[in-house]
Image 1 (cartoon, rainbow, N blue to C red):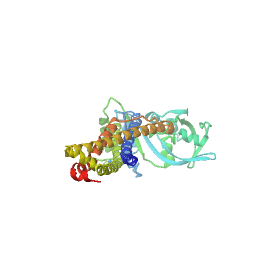
Image 2: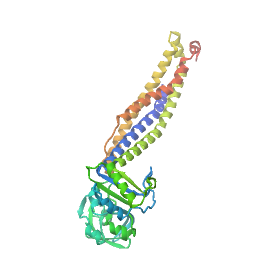
Image 3: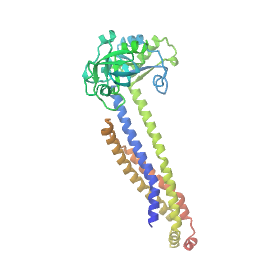
Length: 396
């Protein structure tokens, strides 16, 4: 008896692990998707990004490490003259080692005009932002992310201090307010005037990205079309298939992110569901053992009038009950681990994570549990139903 219970428990373990895994992955996937979309939407729907390189279904050329030099100052000036566009911020980026006294660390720095701080919703904890005058005069001033400031200066206020990047000395004019972990935080970055980053740090005459903020009274698709037309004129492109830039509205970015995160969640859930197949095979095996052990019971029931249908239904119901119990335990286990993950992310990592427990995941878990019981219970149930009652009663 004890062996039977242990065997049943071990068999259900595959179902429990599979269901719990699907619940956890779907829940965390929904939470991650919600978090990323909130981060992107924080910039507003009136933002359009322009990246160099031909349009592709994959990431921009810069993300793939491909250097494309198609965006320049003429493009910025042309876009600034477009009535629908309120402001344009060009950006270049690089990686250097920053040094203060005996302390140093590697970091990624960005360079853009002062209007970029308003575009990217950047807040300061101390100091001030650099000005357009600093950019025009090539003043070597820099703003530090909160983590960079902490690593270099500890508890000392960095504002007014001098740091070195490459062969240049920079005066710290501000420190960004900490944002914690996220896809758009500058805690680990530094920012400098566009001219200094482009001309002196990199020695280039092109930009890595342009960001345009447009008047909300205009439709995003209209503004995107205007930007495309302007850049094609500047780059002397007559064939749209030869575009050397990508224009992406915030709505398109949200659609792309949603499709990627959804596909990733489905893919990971499918991998987790493999354990359900293993669990289903275990259910089939234990039901076959059960049929063998209960051969005399089957013969007795048939002798007193039970039909093949009655026997079939009995073993199918037992199989479904077994997988349903495993599914219920799996849902509970998944909910517990999802809750623990939520508290770990919020209080351990410091991300403003939203707790998502989609009912679709629960419905899927219930459906899959029952279906597993039916599919993998059919063969043992048919074996039981087909037994000859006389042979079954003689079985020892």
